[in-house]
Image 1 (cartoon, each protein chain N blue to C red):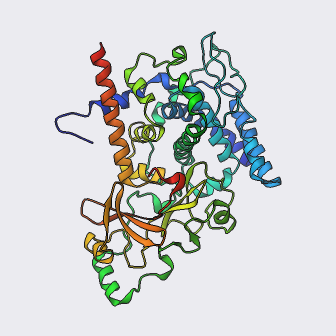
Image 2 (cartoon, rainbow over the protein chains, first blue to last red):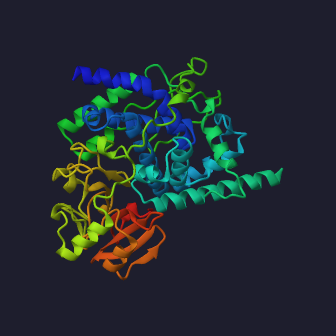
Image 3 (spheres, rainbow over the protein chains, first blue to last red):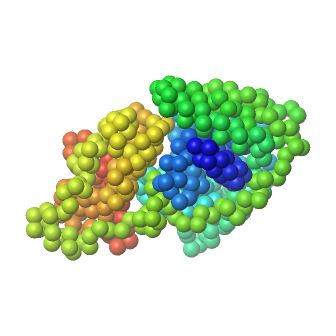
Length: 164
Length: 282
């Protein structure tokens, strides 16, 4: 038990920066990233030895869990807090290091599942098939979500350029 | 997605953005210990009482372990996912070690892995057809001599039934992780028997088991991954195109979804409830 705990602590120490960074890409802001990482790591850590028996690469498993949790969380948040969330969207620019990045701002407006597909594709470098398996959905869904996301990003970026 | 007239500049821009050092999120020195303690609490609670209400409470106890650099007029703490407010974040700006950028090389995964069970058999992400289509067709004319244990449909797979609740699946020892947590929204779970026949089942919070994703399992009509389009059409003459693939009626409240590859062979096979609840976005 003690060794399991030590082992998990060492894993957290090593993996935390990467997971937080990934969470930032996934959620679009550092607060949600911290929330997501903490939630998923605590879940994972509570059954650490089981997970190690089942997988060679806990980090990959955790990243997939984060992507799924992020999508689920969004669904629940949207259902319960839609009105409360909306006014925040435009405000609070100081906390955002990517304030002047049109692409980052365009990403913010994607629904989380589209964003998750984009992050798995361009951050993780996964194929459509791998993304489908990560999220437990069909490849057709991945394709259509990616295509919607890309179209929407292009449209927003074009709009930004024309405004200037 | 790729268009010859439009080079993938956006893809390049996305990769560049995701490699940016500013994505790093510094964490407080106590973050590791707080997470370890949080995990211990979760485990203890689960072992002791394991009422789901108790577990939900543990989640938010260890708030505030990460430092988010923020200007002095920082906004109030963000509401977390369940609407509760977390305590203010602890570490002071300036005391922030630059940990995140050191991880840049960790961004690519070494191997494609399946989400549910990245064991040795799953390292190749391409689901290997269990049987060549020709052999399958012969066998089917022979009168269905496919492995009888590996039948997907019309309303479930083995002891896994569509609509079964998460608790029924877990308590029936059907899930790979006996301590699995209930789904939030819709989540995939690997089965205890391994991934030879089924990659995973997706369980929705509201309607239970909604989707079963086949690896080697076959339908009662003998269709499996690797079957040809012709075999599928002759087994299911009323096959129809839907946005996520081709659908055929499986049973009263369920259908199969087939996704074909470039050679018109079945690449993915799902059994899905007609009502998907929170799994409906696929």
